[in-house]
Amino acid sequence: MSHRVTLLLGGNKGDMCSALRRAVELLEQRVGEVVATSRIYRSQAWGFHATEQFLNQAVVLHTNLEPEPLLDATQAIECELGRDRRAEAEQKAACGERYCSRTMDIDIMFYDSEVISTPRLQVPHPLMQERAFALEPLCELMEEFRHPTLGLTLRELNENLKQR
Image (cartoon, rainbow, N blue to C red):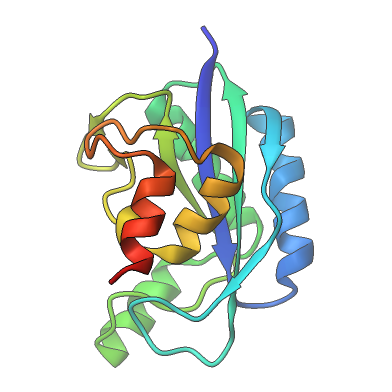
C-alpha cells in the first residue's frame, strides 16, 4: 500500500545545495517516488546559536514503507550524507544547547494524515507550527493540507505564526 509522506530536509554544514540534491536522489532510490519538492529556503538557526544559515526543502513522496522503516531509511541517508549523531550529542552536551549544526536532517512531517506516537517517532512533527523554516516550504507544496491534530491548514498555521 502506498503512503503519501511529507519530509523536511535541512542542514547548515558543508555544501548544502549539493547535499539537498543528493538527499532527494537517495530518497527516490531507496524510499519511494518523489512527487514534489519545494524550492530551497534559507533561515537562521532555530533553538540555538549558529553562524551558518540553514537551507531547508520540503519533499512529498509516495512510499510503501511503514513509519519505523521509513525513519530507519531517512536516518541512514542522513548518516551517508555526513550526519554523526554521536558527535552532535557530545557537542550539545558541551555547550548546553538542545540543537546544533548538522550536515543533513530529514524530518517526517506527515505520514498520510496519521498520528503516530512511538518512543522513536512523533508524526505530525510536534514543533512544526512553531517553525517558519518548516511551514514556508510545506505551504509551497500543500498549503490547504489540514494538520491532523491541530485542525488548521498549513496556510492558517503559517499565518498564525507570522502574526506572533
